[in-house]
Image 1 (tube, rainbow over the protein chains, first blue to last red):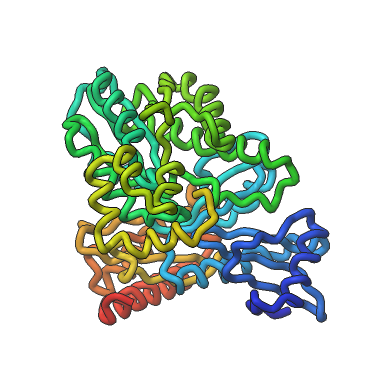
Image 2 (cartoon, each protein chain N blue to C red):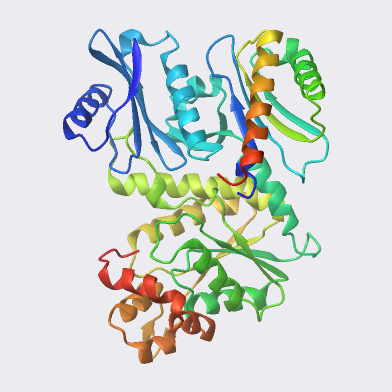
Length: 347
Length: 97
């Protein structure tokens, strides 16, 4: 029996893995950066892959299960992750299989019954994240109205600012979480800084790095399920909101979550639906705010990106705060604007 | 993460082994150990003692250790901790990698 990493650019080798996983009712995903195979007697008997911080597409031939092969695969993948400077990793699986991984040393973060469980291992983890979160805690009485908002802010618009302002006026303290996952056209650092600048005028607002526990849809693997896309998105939203309800709400004593009404994007709509279903059960009121309209048009980050694409800086100025505008006309923004112009992505 | 450069890892998740991650950072005061083990109830304190003793022997006063035990013997724990510490120190010398 021996282990080797396949050349993921070699279609023939990849095809073998795809076929192997297919027999196990699993799918090989596109965003994989590293794949390990275990071969015995010229036959693949196990595999596992890496995509960012996530281990995925792990499978062992049924006749060879129980020999400790998956422990070897996980160890190997962990060491590979470590070489890449990642000390903390995630694994998504179905709840009925979670025990196997927990026995190998993974810890459960949260579940979305009946489909998904999120597990983690390594240095850091949810405990550490919550410790850091406590340092951001604003000085208020825990009984007061404490609100939260989650934004991707790609980039920060007057629409976001309007939502923050409303929350700020109606609450004693507001936490604004910025999604960290870097699958957006504006990199996290830029998005985070623009949110910070755009929220500076509100004294009771604290801007927080969403870290690894505000999950974005692009990271969510679906290789082990055959559900429809809509159902998967809803399960993912449920998992994300469950983590929020289980860890972040009690740590910061959050009482409200402000969300923007979503007229266009189906994914966001499903997220809003999940929030309304779950958050009231942990004492969090969901406040849905209609979108800010300027000259009859709802302000959204995608509209802003479209205007950037068209280089329509006059119209743009009406939809974004001065701080965002100033960034967009700076030298720093040049590569991002180029990227937006050449991109067809909606995100 | 600011401290990625000062982490050392050693061991595996296979049966009778232990996976040890050691983080040497200036913000850490004293020794903090997080242990996961199937035999934590019986041998948890013994494993912790072995890890602490090994760190002490190496002159490490401040460290965050994450240990994923799978039923390792004391000598294995010893070796894994020592290697992880030395790897972390090596990272530290090289600076940002």
